Image (cartoon, rainbow, N blue to C red; front, side, top):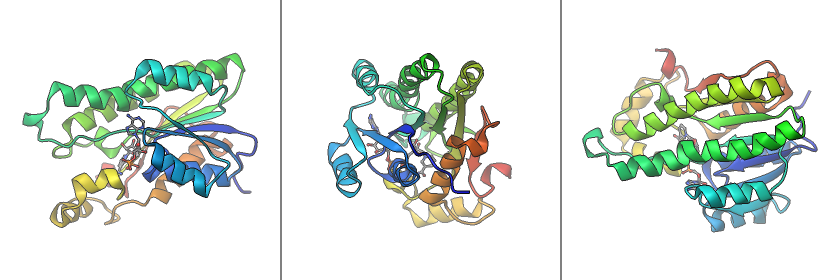
Length: 244
Ligand SMILES: NC(=O)c1ccc[n+]([C@@H]2O[C@H](COP(=O)([O-])OP(=O)(O)OC[C@H]3O[C@@H](n4cnc5c(N)ncnc54)[C@H](O)[C@@H]3O)[C@@H](O)[C@H]2O)c1
């Protein structure tokens, strides 16, 4: 049986490009009414020109008040994908408080902000919803030049477990996925150097990086009824990297 999200309203953050765009489009194909939220208006307009029935909203998630007001104004959702994030790749000794704040504002605080607004409405409406947070293998494994990013994704994993615990009694499931490198705009910054990429691939039992579609498939599963008893997990999509 095909997975269908017909009649479901789903908010996807960071949906203008990369993994978030892939998730938004696949959920739309499966019948969902999608609101694609991101910072860059032009990316969202390109998405909407291809998929006119996808609604788009541009907001900078670093702005807590504005984001809260915007998400409040969007009304009720059946599901949420917290995908937007940034990665500032610096050697640990060069990391600044500014890098830390910028990263945590988007990768952690914005997730708290948006999830609170969405989950409160789910609770009010007695919606048995689902939330998926896009974490990273970097939350579990130390990767060179990823100190702040890793710390933010580890915080996101912890937030996922806390949300699963407190929202579970309302019938809302919260899970995370932890992908390995997927060659999007974000990954190109850190992994374009062929030697570095080859070194990383050699540590992945399947011997390659992941594809956007491989993250999308896991997110679709975790949002669907097929995963109805799965709550509070952090699912590696990493070809076995974290198992080694
Ligand atoms: N690409 C990888 O190798 C990889 C690996 C593991 C996890 N991830 C995670 O997957 C998710 C998607 O990453 P991606 O590779 O598609 O990255 P990307 O840079 O291609 O896309 C990120 C999206 O987030 C949006 N965004 C960033 N800052 C924002 C802000 N302040 N306000 C609103 N929107 C903002 C961007 O506009 C963009 O649409 C992220 O959570 C990332 O940490 C990526």
